[in-house]
Every structure is written in C-alpha cells, then in structure tokens.
Image (tube, rainbow, N blue to C red; front, side, top):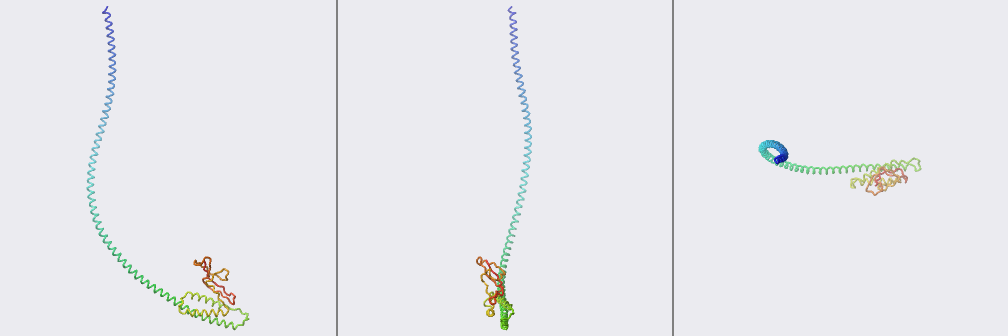
Length: 301
C-alpha cells in the first residue's frame, strides 16, 4: 500500500522536477537565443566595421600613393625650380653686367654731349648777346637817324608851307586892296549885290593857316613874318566891314547859330560841359550881319 502511494508521489515529484527542469531549460534556451541574437548583431557590427576598416585602409593606401606621387612631383618641381633659378641667376648676372656696361657708356656719352651742349649754349648766348648789342646799337642809330630825318623833313615841309602861305597872304592882301579900290569906285547907293566870295575865301584861309601855325614850333623859319601877314589881313578884313567871330575853346550852347560837324568824347572835360575844340569854317559877319555860319567840332563829356 505504501509502495503503491510512494510510486505516484515519486512520479509526481519527478514530473514536477522535470517540469521545473524543462522550464529552466526553456529560460536558458531563451537566454541563449537572445545571446545568439546579440552575438549575431555584434558579428554584423564587427563585419560592418571590418568592411569600413578595409575601405579606410584602401583609401589610406590611395592617399599614400597620391602622397608619394605628389612627393615625386614636388621633388621634380624643386629640381626644376632650382635649375630655373640657376639659369635665371646667370641671366640676371649677365643682364646686370651688360646694363652696367651700357650705363657706364651712356654716362660717358651723356657727359660728353652735355659738355658739348653747354659749350654750344654758351657760344650761342655770347653770339646772341653780341648780335643783340650790335643790332640794338644799329637800331638806335637808325632810329636816331630816322627821327632826325623825320624832324628835318617836317621842318622842311613846315618851312615850305610857311613860304606858300606867305605868298598866299601877299596874294590875298593884293586882292583885298583891289576889292577895296573896286568898292570905292562903285557908288554907295548902287543896287548891285555885294560879292562876299573873296572875303569868305580869305576867312577860310586865315582859319586854316592859324590851325597849321598852332601845330608848329615857334622857332620855325618864316613863322613870325607869316603871323604878321595874317594880322595885316585881319586888320584889312575888319576895315572892310568884315568880322571873324572867334569861337575856338568857347563853351558850346545849342542856341548858337552854328553847324556842329562832329561831337567828340573827351573824358578830361567836366561832366556835362561842351567846348568848341576845332573850327572848320569861321563865322563871318559883314556890318554885324551874319553872312557865313561856322562849322565846328565840339568835345563833350
């Protein structure tokens, strides 16, 4: 009976134990599966890193190859640069030597040319000064000679003019005398109109002569006799009833019975003043009656 009870109990215990062992085994299997999964994941990561490492190694090798190539090129360039520098240095030295020779030669040529130019300039200046002095002296002498000739010519012309005017004065005096004798012969109550043409001609000539005399030197030969002759004519003129009104240098008034030929601007005159500065034809009165209006030039400011 006891054996019969013990067997089921043992079977149950065994079953329980087996179940517990089975449960434990399942847990361990699950843990092993998780660990395997983690291991697989780690192996995958390791494989990926290995691949990346291989790629990096490959890139490194490529970089090393490029570096080696660049190193070779750099060495070649350094050699080329060194060779070019040596050639360039030699050429620079040659050029410098040639330049020094050219500059030295140029300095010599410039110094020589400069000396020649200085000598030529000095000679030119000296010759120019001598020529200028000679020309100045000659021009001064020529100017003096020309001025002397002009003065002599002017004097000769003035003297000749005085001679002609003196002869004209004599002719006018003789004609005035004839005119006076003719008047004495003609009866006073005669209806014949008086001819004033000679008197007016004499008046015009007197004005012309006086104008010329005002421009001459007082010491001109024959001037004084001419002045005396004009004074005689004026006296004879007045004795025949004629009067020459002196308007020269008189203030001009628009109410004057005269003809103004030209108005001349003269800033030396006071503002607003007008002066008769030239008489072209004189004013002539006969027995206090106007027979010829004056023609004048008036200066004004």
